[in-house]
Amino acid sequence: MKLICHPISPYARKAMILARLHSIEVEEIYPEKDGARGYLAGDNPLGKIPALEWQTGQYLFDSPVICDYLDSLGETPILAKDKHSHFLQKWQHALGDGLSDAVYNYRVETARPQKFHWPEVIQRHETAIVQSLDTLEYICDWLGGPWTYGNIAIICALDYAGYRAAHLGWQSRAPKLAAWHAGFKGDAAYASTYGYPND
Image (cartoon, rainbow, N blue to C red):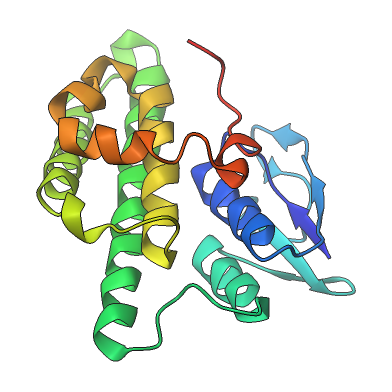
């Protein structure tokens, strides 16, 4: 299988981690990016990553679909089967993706020239980031470890926030969450997919 991906994308990184956790052999391809069309690989009409060639010439997207598929291939899937735990992990996964969305949107808005900034929109995305961090700090005891289907998305989102919204200093705002997050740094799947510049 081919996985069109890049570790700077928190969405792609989730799939990269899941492939490693389940020892699934995938060819990881880092695509070129065109400003108008997005990523130029993976047969995704949305121009986004990740995309997974699950059958010859056929690609799955978006990231939750890919994660569900890769997890289903594992000998021991990490998404809980118990109904309550199953949907709790799905909710956590969605919260992680939502945090990544807010960080991405904040980055896009603030990367524009100053004269094109829309302060209300920037504040909206920053508020979403802060509220997500506050929620994660509050539910930190639920996040579990080592890896769950839910916390994969959260770990990837937190690293992305540290990269693209570093001014918020999420570790200081959420110290309990920061301590939990630090526990993953020695994990091989975490370290081998961490693609952000060193501080």
